[in-house]
Amino acid sequence: MYKISHVRELTELKDMPAEIISKVESIVKILDDNYGTERSLNSDGGIAIIIEPQDKISVLNEIGINIEKLCPEYTEIIRANDIDYIHSMILFSNEYSCHIFCEKSKATANLIDC
Image 1: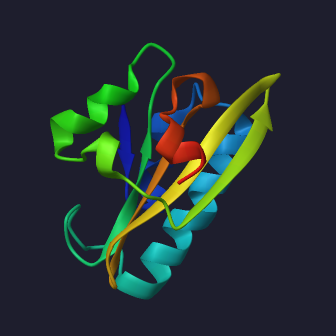
Image 2: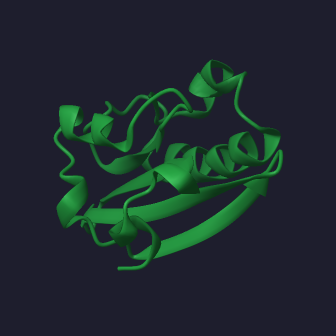
């Protein structure tokens, strides 16, 4: 699992499809521009979490995100390398968003259609 909150961390995603990297980049650029490049992982702004192909979606529980109770504000499907990926945005407060990316086949039903 990757936790990306700044543009400078995008190099960690070198093995991910370009379409996913591009979407994550656009999100964290907005976060850096609006909340600063020196903010911590848990401060205002947010984070992009990318579930790696070898991980299960339940890895989110390990960082305190209860996947059974999530109801995204927004979900889209991104097609990359003949695989459908889910991008779901969850708001935890008016100043913190979590963008979850995973292969559609791993997503829980509520991540796809809440």
